[in-house]
Length: 215
Ligand SMILES: C[S@@+](CC[C@H](N)C(=O)[O-])C[C@H]1O[C@@H](n2cnc3c(N)ncnc32)[C@H](O)[C@@H]1O
Image 1 (cartoon, protein in one colour):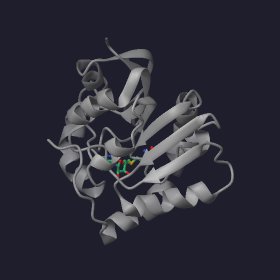
Image 2 (image 1 turned 90 degrees about the vertical axis):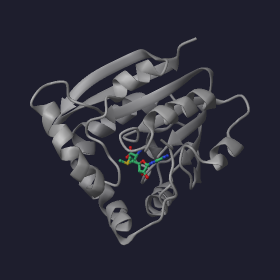
Image 3 (image 1 turned 180 degrees about the vertical axis):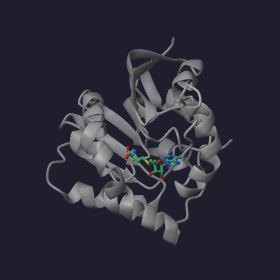
């Protein structure tokens, strides 16, 4: 399956982008921003942020990070641009309208690879997560790290059954988000090794990790 498909902004995608931050604000305040902070403070050098959305991570990078933030949705990018204009963003951040599988990303990627790839709440949505992880391997420099926060499949029943049952409708409402992806298992099956990892529950299970490529 392809990792990227042409993104056309519809009225629905514009509405979703407009309300993404207000919808997420409760989760951000209660746990998500802190989890992002614990992850992103370590990013420095050349950083690729995949699926930057409205730019929720931007203020959490430090001044030593030089970030290429890619996002295929023009509607989301509009809000990401506004965030960049706000005070409090210390990293150098360049926005690019592109998905992970797009040629533009490879064209501007550093020859030696990125020091970090950041992926927060994105692997649930990319059309082909296995293929996206293959691309991450190609784009990361040897010894580079993948920084992840993702909600994942629940291994408990009946929660797992419920996630499966709800995902087809949820996918349509959320422009592609799968509630039932075992992203933690997929990462390991695709040759990533967790240097640090944590699982936590907030309605659904989340996976937080710093990963490196197996040799
Ligand atoms: C739930 S939002 C998360 C946004 C942001 N990363 C955050 O943490 O708030 C998922 C984002 O992934 C983006 N996305 C979907 N497919 C993608 C792809 N193939 N490559 C890069 N981003 C993608 C969507 O456009 C959307 O902005």
